[in-house]
Length: 318
Image (cartoon, rainbow, N blue to C red; front, side, top):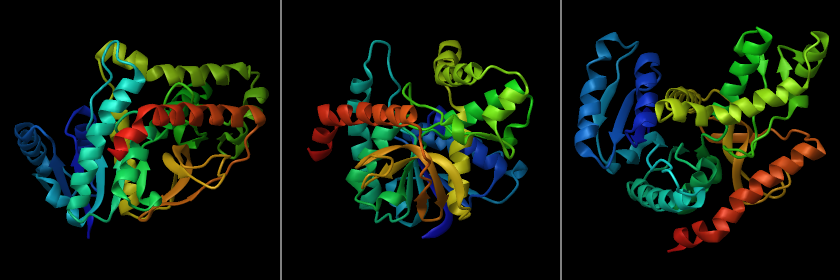
């Protein structure tokens, strides 16, 4: 395995936003681009490579194929179709499950034994698909989960309180979707409980729920205005890749495998805070949730499991 070698599968807006972020920030020694559109991949390789004289470090960038996965430290999957007008979430999941299955089989055929990061939507389901098909230990398959949702939350709370987003310690948990939630009792501004900060400043606590609703609606609003969202998730993926490569032991709300009653769940990938290092998920952070918050997490998991049982599991087994 080559430390710092990353393979990107999918050179659409999301994948290339991650690649551009990596080019600008460094931390990767080798970046391999794979896509079904070979000409586009070569074009992306050329375009990125021409920026190397301005990059912070030396880096190999090239278009490649799945045999490049064999000695990669991290493979990032951003491939898949976007949801079309009138298409149900289940229909999207079925189509992308077939795509994920084929991609994963190609990755594993190379002899790959590193970490897979999944960003394709619906991300919690797609991470489960990749884990099942790959046969890798569950800690080595990670979804982007609610990492971007959490960043949006930190930004909006920061803007509301006029405090740096770096000092906003709050997390969005659950499904990367409408059923997500914020455990506000575990949210802090610096070292002070966020609810206390709100009360001390005379701000209504109801505004926190409004902020969460704005986070949930953010992607829809961006898509309505510019057709797609990709810069934020591209930077989030770069952060996740950097955390793995540098063995940072950083806490991120990734889509993580829950088992044996963790958070009251079993055999499901869902967004929860976890410590990430070069082995993937080192451990979960088990937060004590309120009854209402536990019900929200249960609902998120129920939605995902129903979609799995309706068709996803059958596609995996075919």
